Amino acid sequence: MSGLFIAWAPHNRRSQQIAEALGLQLHFIHRGQYRAPIYAPFKYPLMALETWRLLNRAKPKVVFTQSPPPLLPLVVLLYGFFWPVQLVIDHHTAAFSGAWAWLGPLRAWMARRAAFNLITNEHWQERIERWGGQALVLDDVPADFPMGEAYALPTGANVVVISSIAPDEPLELVLEAARQQPDVHFHITGDKRRVPENLLRAAPANLQFTGFLSDAQYFGLLRAVDALVVLTTRDFTNQRGGCEAVWLGQPLVISNWPVLQRAFHRGAVHVPNTVEGIVGGIQEALTRRAELLKGMAQLQTERRAHWQAVSGQLHRLLQATS
Image (cartoon, rainbow, N blue to C red):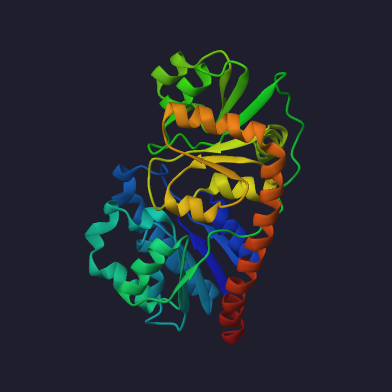
C-alpha cells in the first residue's frame, strides 16, 4: 500500500477529487453527529483508534489527511514514530480558525513535519511558511461532474444559491434580494432541516429551498439554471460552490473578498454582501452570461495548468516512496 487519503468526515468532495486524481485509497472515518462540537470528546478517540488500526493494517508510505480536525494529522505523525510514513496535510480554511487555537504551537510543529501542506490560497501559504512548513497552493482539482438528471424549472430566469446552510452564508440577504427580483427564480440548496424556521416562513414565492438533493438531481439543477450564486461573510476562505461553477462552466456571482477575486478572476461577478450588491450582481450575470461563459472556459484552462504543476510534485513524492 503506497498511499492513503483519510478524512474524519462523512464525505468531502475536495478530498474525493484529490484521492481520485492521485490514485490514493480514500477512507472517510466518521462517528456520531457531524459538526457537533459537544460530541467531539467522545467521537475523536474512537476515530483516532480506527485510524490507527487502518494505518497499522495498510502500512502506507504516504498519507494525505484532511484538516480540520488537526487531530487527524497528529495521529498519523504519532504513528510515524513506529512506521516510516510521509504526511501531506490538506488544510481547509476552518483548520486555521480559533476553534483549534487550543492546540497552540502543536499546529506549527505538525506543519513542519509534513512533507507538504496543501492550502487553498496565498494567505494561508504565508501562515504555513511562517510556521516553517512546506506549502503548496491548491485552490481546486479539475473535475468532470456528471450530467445529472433533467430538472424542471419555472419559466424565466433561474439561479441557484449553493448553500450548506452554514453560519457564514447571508441567507437573509438572499431572501430580500429574491423579493426585489420577482421575475428571477431562486433555488437554495442544502439540508432544509437546518434552515431556521423564520427564513422558511419569510421566503418569497419566487424562492424555494430544495432540501437535500442526490448528485444526479444536484448537478442536473446546476447545469439547468442561468447562473450560480455563492456567498460568504468569512474572509480568506475558498468556496467549493465556486469551484463547481468553474468545472460546470456556469456564470458565477460570488462575494468580493480579495482571495475570491483572485481565485475567480474570470467568469464571475464579485459582489458585496448586501441586498443591493446581490441584486445587481445577479442582474449583471444574467446580462453578461455569454461573456462570463467564455471567461469560465479560460479559467478552466488556467486551473488545469496549475493542477499539473502541483500534482507533479505530489506524484514525485508518491513515486519516491513506492
